[in-house]
Length: 426
Image (cartoon, rainbow, N blue to C red; front, top):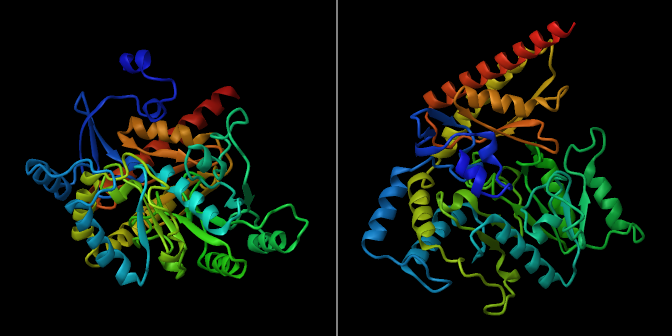
């Protein structure tokens, strides 16, 4: 690992949590240079919903490259882009009665968010954006302004202008947070300017697996319509089937004005896009651009994923089936240790959180102990207090159960070690 310590920037993060050199991967398995196999419950922070080195993607990319298909095309028309757009429209949008135009942004999620914020301000002629507590939308400056996590916010470089934060669903145990929001909108002296848009994740991933209810989302949409505010759903991490449905907001029956997509939409390759209602498409040609907004390899990968996994409900049904396995096992582990620890289990689909409420520092230790059991799982939340589960959606039942057994072993061992240490101290 010395070459990374000597030559790579100190900004590196995940390498510190998982200190080994990975060499190969397949499905839900990562293998390091020593031949050790790890079950991956992180999946590239939600980028690898279809698993590592998915054979459908591999075959399509190899075939495309061998016939000298266009790799880089800016925003020119290419066969790969045409086929992706056709497949996305026929497979995803039309069956859900969604009418959106597609804007290809730079290849990362924060590019899509920046584009959405810029367009909302352009269309509405207002600068304020409302975001929510514990929200995460990216680390470029505009996206960072609507990101709540204080780990990423620093007065020395962040611009906090033109962004107002409101409490997310459940932020106050006994208060309807949308009544709070509405009060600010109604009061001309609240100091909150009428926003151009509201941006949110329906399931806050980095924020700690906080889940907005169906009723809360419907009421938020109603407020946006009443006050002429655009509703932007950031589905970068929890879209693309992560919640069980392709879009995380489907269960609530809402119809956002814009949707940001990235991570798994590219089938593991860099790609991001903004879905926008046709009347919002008020750009002048070339008004918002980027060199790498046309990743044709990602178009190929994405199309093959759409064609193989979203022609029917099989993948969604599989996600809901695996959710029960995941949730039941995590709850079983929580119940085993309920005399010593208060553990909260929450999630939807295959994004779940495991939070030890009476010991915020323990999540990082659980992740470390899990790594020692050859399991990859990360932490999230405002204080890194939640262990996050993001396995590939295509993970086989055997690997899912084995990974959960390893997690249980890690938790049991850590709790036992803490108990023994406490006993020695007294």
